[in-house]
Image 1 (tube, rainbow, N blue to C red):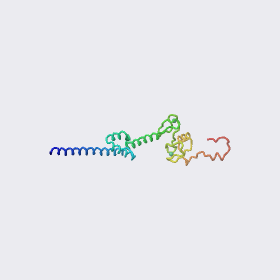
Image 2 (tube, rainbow, N blue to C red):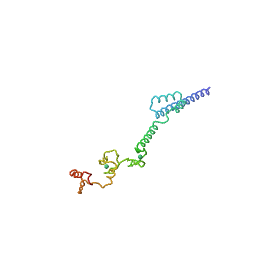
Image 3 (tube, rainbow, N blue to C red):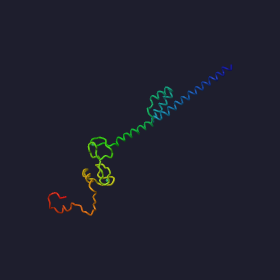
Image 4 (spheres, helix red, strand yellow):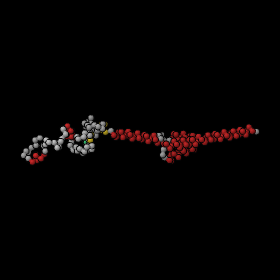
Amino acid sequence: MTLPANLDVFASALVFVIGAYLVAIYVGLLVWTWRDVRTRTRDVLAQILAILLVAVFTLPGVLIYVLLRPKETLVEAYERSLAEEAVLQDLTDRRTCPSCQRRVEDGFILCPYCEHQLRLKCVNCGALIEPTWKLCPYCGHRHEVPPAAAEEHRRRPSRKPESAEPEPQPEPILSEPTASGAPQP
Ligand SMILES: [Zn+2]
Ligand SMILES: [Zn+2]
């Protein structure tokens, strides 16, 4: 009766191999679930629940986990949030005309749609400055004149305070209060 004994050994070996194969698959499923759930959530409870789901229900548990798991991984979610932030930043960077709310370029001085004064050009250094600024932050020049006067001032030749030719000063007008009207230019 050697053949049935051999058959018995063969059968038990077959059972062992199949059992080891199933255990390997089982452990593989657990490891895969563990790795996958960690890329998708930082919630420890959710991670444990996913492992338990696969540990108890094995292959159907994996199916349920795949159906229920978070759609994107943490890296994908992070990249998406970065992209959304970039879009938002791009939108806030774009200037709109405060008067007509249409989009204008950053270097515009006047709104091309409603002619609203968006920026001023510094009369000293030519930099673009906001009309509400008291002075040019690039050269320190004060521009406390209205925009129209500033434009006129820009067109005039640059004044030289120490020039040999004396410019009309307000003092002679004050010292000679003869004329009651406006002083002659
Ligand atoms: Zn406008
Ligand atoms: Zn300036």
